[in-house]
Length: 133
Image (tube, rainbow, N blue to C red; front, side, top):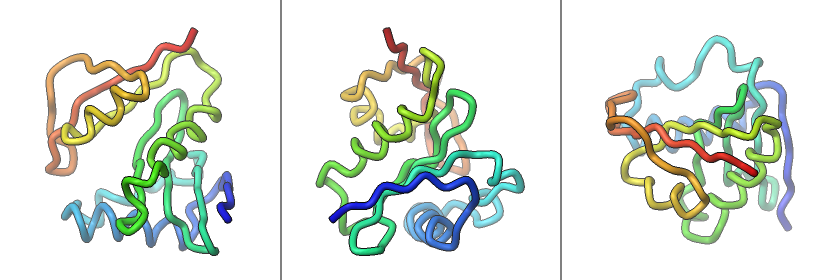
């Protein structure tokens, strides 16, 4: 059974999953992963059997830090967390900085790339946006 939670603070579960995915798997420096203003974001979470398996962070029309626990990937949780995150945004335009290797995933969700690729935390990214009707 899945449980959806919207958190207003950075919980230990969220911090742990983000460190697992970004710091350990992707070698993002830990000092770049957690920001001082985390309590200003909406934290979208999907739990399965009380384990946080999918996460996204939302702020002012922007979705970021999208991740899925390794053993739950390719099971639709990336799409589910994106749809949950999009529901938290009232504006017509949604922005993301997508990792270049995940560009196709976001395109399948209706996002379009713009601008040049850039490095963020040592990982190649591309700015993408979705305009809702």
